[in-house]
Image (cartoon, rainbow, N blue to C red; front, side, top):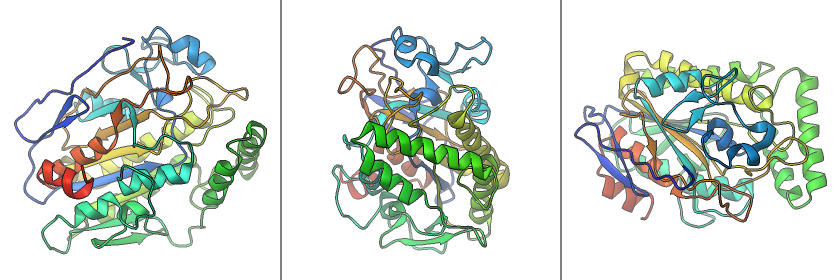
Length: 383
């Protein structure tokens, strides 16, 4: 497993996409009928917690008390392909895996190799090969490839339109009435500012956690807990997408994945976030109803986290992470791309970024809207 290579093979005729040595295959859908949902996990989700490489011989020694037990053990991870398991709080995603409606890619990253949340998010959303001050996002550029129609637009579920939806294509935003503005933007900027100082970075992370506990709820919608907030936003996205003439795409931004301190394994702040994400996917599926069969969802984060646990029981900004491709329209049940193993690390701290996350975006876009994959890569990602 330490240098394991896995391929996503085509199960049905239809679109295939070469991605870092792998191929992704999707079910056929009527022209222009598909819906595309992009879920951004802001703050950097720990991919080794979401998808545990439990059979890698270096996994337990490196992860320490953050390591998950093997499938079948108490609080064990949920079995995926050989040697990998989902966090036990990702029950809905595991059900989709069993239905062959979900695949994942590990050791995934944009071309960004530094550790600033904002530069990393900008590159993730711009879909570029370098940090730029660009004003357009890859999902907006993809929308511009659709034939002109009322539904050839995207909606952001939130107060503002994120970079990924900005550009010449039609895009709008929707937010719950009276929803407070999140101050997570300010907190993450402070996190970047303090990143070079372990003492200040840890103090900030612990202060944020303490404040959330004191408030009785983590950052979310008007005092609801994170699980309810994520699910509510996903339900709203489903209603908008499934309305007559509803948009072709939606973007959901879920904050709070920067787990520098007291991360936890099967319980704790990260476990709660993963449960919230899982419930959001369940709400999206339920809310879309019959339209779920024509829906493609991509879940990604700006970068991964360090392999080793830090001195306060958390993980710091890393490189290679995990992403998911799922939905009723996806022919899944495979790990996509390469697994580099844990016997060597990027800069002796991070999972090696073996797979370009943009190929996952391109795969979902090309299928969801029956676009030519070569055109998607050339026009959307300039590759």
